Structure formats: C-alpha cells, structure tokens
Length: 612
Ligand code: ARG
Image (tube, rainbow, N blue to C red; front, side, top):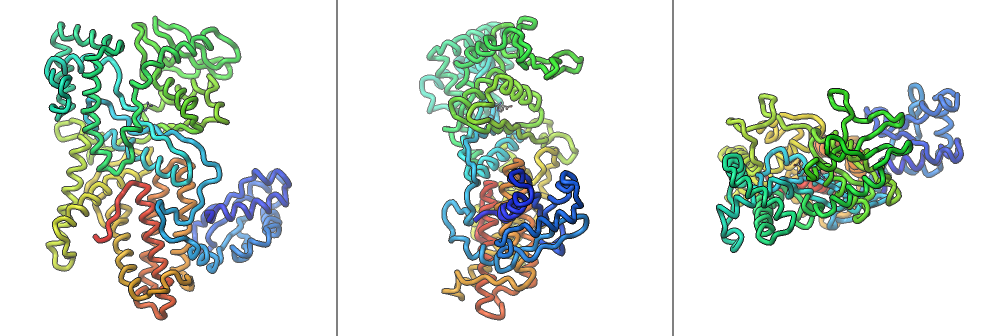
C-alpha cells in the first residue's frame, strides 16, 4: 500500500502531465491535509502557483486539472470541489478507506501495517550519542541518544539501509593523565582488568586532572603517556583499553534501559581515525595548498597552525569571527596535534568512501552548528559530496533541557545531572503514581509487585523520552516531572494508557466474534470514517517525519490518533454495537488503532504494556 498522499500525488501528476506535457512530471501537486474536515480530507493548492506561470485564472486552471484527472480518481475520491481562489478539495470515498484497511495484512515482525518500503532506499549513516569516555553520561547526551535512535529507526522503517555510528570521544591528550593515574593508583587494572571497576568515572577523571595540575612530576608522566599511547606502547594501550571498557560498562546499561538500539559494534570512536588523520591533512594540503581561483578553500599555515580557509563565490572569506576576521577550520595545531575537526574530516571521508553513504546525519546540540557548517563546506569544496551519486549531509540540532528556573537543567548544587540518576527518579515517580492508584478503591487494578515494577519502568522511561521527542527539537524545553507523567495531554502515560485500554476492549470483544475477526469494515458513522482516515495517515506521517528529520510529527500524529479514537469510542458502541457485523468492524478498527500506536511508540523506542 502507498500512502494516501502518494496515491493522490500520482493521480494529480498524471493530470499535470496531461496539461503541461513533460514539465508536469516534476511539478509538485501540492497535496496537503485539509485543515477542516468540512472541506474534505486533502486539498491540492497547485492551481494557484501554476496559474501565474501559465497566465490564466487559478479557478479556471483548477477546473482543467480536475477534468484531466484520470478515470481511476473516481475509485479513490468523491467528485472534486473547487473552492475559493482555486483550491481543489478532495474527499476520499469511505468504501475505499474501508478496503484499504481490510487489506492491511495480519501482524508480522517487523509490523509494517502493509506499507511498502520507499522507492529509493539508500545507505545512510546516523552519527549519534557520542559519549565522552571516562566521563559519566549526563542529560546533555540524552537528547542526541534518543533523537538519533528514533531517526535511525524511522529511516529503517521506510526502507533505508542505516549504519549507526557512535562517535565516542575516546582519544586525545586527556588520556595521558588518565592512563598515568590509572597505572599509579590501580596497577591491578592492567594485570587483572576483570577484578576491579571504576564505580565513579567522574570522580576518577576529577582526581586525575587535579593531580595533573598539582604535581609537576605526574604532569611529565602524563605527557609521556600521550606519546606512549600514540606509539601503541602495550602497557599504555592496556590502560587505555581498560578505561574505554569501563566507560562502556556505564553507558551500555543506560542504552538498554532507554530502549536505544546502539551496540558496541556501532562504536567507531575518535581512536579509530587516529591513524588516518595525517593522510587526510596531506590530501588537503596537496590539493588545496596553493590558491586557485576555482577552489572554494585554501589550505595554509596561520600562526603555526595548519588551516582551511573557506571562500565565497566572490572570493571573500566565508566564515568570520566576531572581530570580522576570517575564521578558518584548524586541522593541525602548531605543536602538531590534530583536532576534533580533523577527526571529523577523516570520519566523513571514511563514511563516504569506505561505507558508501549517500546521506550522513549528525545529531548533536546546536552549539556545534558552526563546526558542522564548516565540515560540510569543506567536504563540498573537496567534491566528496559528489561521490555515490551525490551525498546529502545533515546536521540535526537540538536545544537545551531547562530546569523549572529556565536555566540549563542542573542538580541543586549546580552540577550536571547524571543520566542514570535521572532515569532512576523517573521510574521511582512512576511507581509512586501506580501505587497511589492501587491504594484508591475506585482506581485499583490489582497489580502484583512484579507488574508494578514493570509498568513503572516502562512508564517512567517512556515519559522522559516522550517528553523530549514530542518537542520541536530545535527549541529548548522545560523539564517537568508533573507534565511528563500526566495521564492527560500529549504524554507517554496518555499514549500508553490509550494503547492498553484499546487492547483490553479488543480482547473482550474478540472472544465473542470468532470468525468475523477478519470481516468487512464499514464506515457509516463520521467518527468511524475519521478514525479510518487517521490510521491510514500513518505512512505519510512517517514519510514527512523522515524527510524533515522531525520526530514531533510522529508524536503529534499519535496524540491525534488517540483523540480521534476517543471520539469514535464515545459515539460508536463497540462491544454493544447493534449488529454482529458492526461489532466486528469496530473491533477491527480498535485492533488497527492499537497496532498503529504500538508501531509508532516502537519507533520512539517506547515500550507498551498490555495493562495499565
Ligand atoms: N563526543 C562529541 C561530544 O560529546 C559528540 C560527537 C558527535 N559526532 C561527531 N562526528 N562529531 O560533543
């Protein structure tokens, strides 16, 4: 099955080809969901823009387009209506909506709801999470991790081949002091790494760095360790490996708990590129070391550092610092050290040349916007982006999480909140709410201890994730326990409860309808028709969310689905429907609604529970 929008686009495009000839092939039929159901389900706004070009009246052109629509249009739509200056209002036929839903195959794994994969699947690298080794993950990493994971899942869902890359910060001069400190304080970590653990990474890092500042002899050792690490000195490499492994021991359980699909196999940290940095730098120096009028970058030393300067088409500096001076991308410092930017150049080259990516998506906070703008400009200037039939580069940015005081979320004492602590608290609060419900005679569900724990885990973690993913990612948002755990509104508990409730209705009814389970769907009531339409809008929602890399389109859709279902349930008796056929049809709508909710929440990495 193709999405409703795609089906309409195909029909309208044929009309446009009829009118415009070949030029119609690339014309956008501008199919949009109608704002008000009284005007139909969709509208095409194409006549307005096109009329100007063809120098005719939009309404006349709209008439011509409607007349040129192919015969099959009548199978899908009621007769078109032309409104206002030239909108074409489209109403879908209820019997077609019913047929499309009837054609949805039974649940498979993965459940695609009968949606065909996209037409042009490609290989896409999604770079997300990227925790820094030897540091505790804090709330700042939460957004990259969950936004990136959802984007990866959605891309896979529409049929792309996704390569997850966890660009962990596992290299750099700080490892000198960490290795020196480890060798000194915990020599057993080198000989028997399994027997000792770093329980508090942050603390270990802090101690090492304090020692580095206070103790000149230690500082010398730390510097020697940096050199030893670069030379792959076995004992230093062992110390480094131990620190990396210990860090992984901290973040893997957090991924698992968050329902994030990253595995150690997705790690390709900064250390992976360490050996490739000089090669990349050489490539740029050789190709762009001398100024050439055609090139949009020039590579030259500046105050001892090797820099890439970007130029506009007019030969002006493309990036400038606040003092209005040209701002270069530094790729090698005066002491010979490479930088974050150098590693990202090597990584991007690897992703395009070795992994064969046609799209690379980076998920980091907005503060890295300039870094990625420069990286992308460099890749373009070096023609990397013309490989593999064209490579698209995207920086998916996001705002900060704020406390109720509207300042970046911190603990009372002003420290970064550890992600693990935050998740514990979420689950604790969810558990409290469930227990309060159980203590109330009117609400009691009779859950046992194990059920309470399971539901609390799903609801607590789900609430934190959903509160984040349902935002327009570019904005900052205020972290509020009360809001995210509320049973009303666009929240995880609301969505999960809607799912559990619909499932329970279905279970009750399914027992009584037997054979009719896969029977006909009838959409006589307007609430039934609107529910069917909303379910069938799932594919186009995912398409739009993927195209714009906007997850909140999915959460908005799910919330709307919950609302449309509630209206349906209020006005259309399901278990007490007047005929067995109607009951079977409505139960099937319940089942399809629940499935759509589950698939949607699954794309967000949020678990559903059958009872709540
Ligand atoms: N480790 C980095 C940080 O914490 C994130 C890495 C993002 N990915 C990249 N290719 N630069 O800021």
